[in-house]
Length: 202
Ligand code: ZN
Image (cartoon, rainbow, N blue to C red; front, side):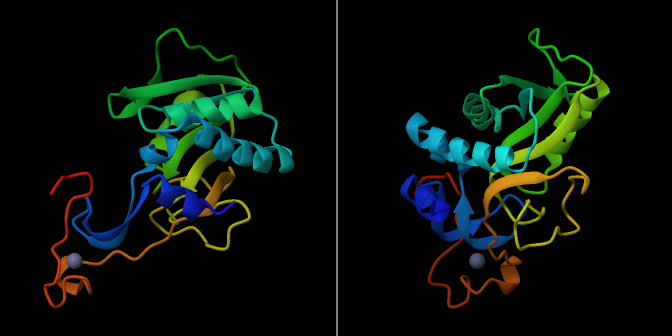
């Protein structure tokens, strides 16, 4: 599976000159939700992710996603793994289980995201699950932005990664790309283009 091609086709991976939320510039940008616009394509991706998880011998009862970004990927992964799907929501700086969702002590849970950047939301979801007695057996994500180490991946975790080393992260591929401080951005040099905010028109 050529993940980059699938993302590009779905316009989930953009080439250009972008101003990121961090203030840095980049020549590439991921808008992960776009790759989930078509359920058939989403199912292909989560089927591949489920195969990786099964091959690693991970036993799973439930997939839990941090809302909002992870919900669709989590639901599709649960379908691929033929297990239950739940999600946690932001509450007082952390994440909480609401809407009548419950877990039983010792329940084996995978935390699923569409993309893991530094893993902050996934970690908050894991803490919420562990506080309720659930066992977080793995993290899963369609794409890994390259700050955290994915199982079987070539890249080591960077200091920014919030996820604990003791729990594996399964992702289909790494999407590592350069970011530049505005004053050091090679795309700004010469002034041919201006960095635009991804998602903005014109
Ligand atoms: Zn620039």
